[in-house]
Length: 294
Image (tube, rainbow, N blue to C red; front, side):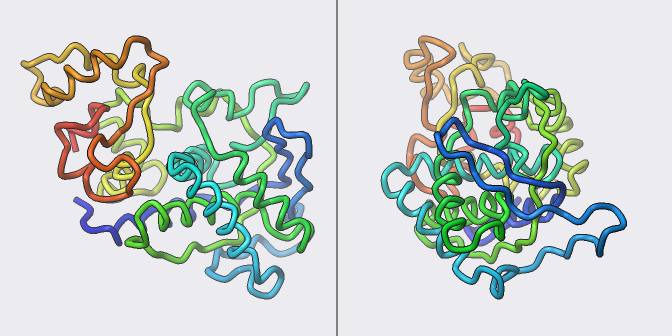
């Protein structure tokens, strides 16, 4: 199993899942539509995309990471839950078509059902406004240079550092391109479901080039943030004969709190705002069944 706060730096592995496609066209429902980011070269028009690298923007936009970090700090200091949302946003982006910011694309007449409207994402993802603020600030200084995909990656890294109170530090490679293909139909087959068993999850993670150890490490992000009661409703009331059954005290408490599937509760009742190892030490108090299985 993954050990120590530093091991949570495996979030950086997600940064290597993809660097594909074209322009950033998300508006997140805000009045100002984001300006396009750099696009990859057309087939035969130039060299293939560069390999991701730490410090990719050092020459073209040396303040890129600092600008993103400022937007993330502002949001997390106001609401630590947004930090958890940014980590989840990165994960959900990367697991569908790679880390290409396709999670940001809004519906259009040509594509009325983008990823953000997929069942695992609709009305559950948070942090879009932070990406919006960072992108707007970057465009003022370096128009069309920093991709939205890299902004999401930087934001997830910065949220990890802040929520761990500085215990987790790692460099985030960059150089991704933004995607223009975003399909709600691709979310369910590619994203881990809360009721999936370990075998299913292991197969899914391996299909993304991630090991069992990576899966356990990344699952530790559930030590922060909230969960909808509908995501673990199948575990209530508690089944005492189930070896992976939820802790009896927790099950009783949640039964009272979860009056409806839309209600939300903290993933970690002990240190809900901190990215720490509590998820692993309190496995019997995990909300979703895979947490106990790990």
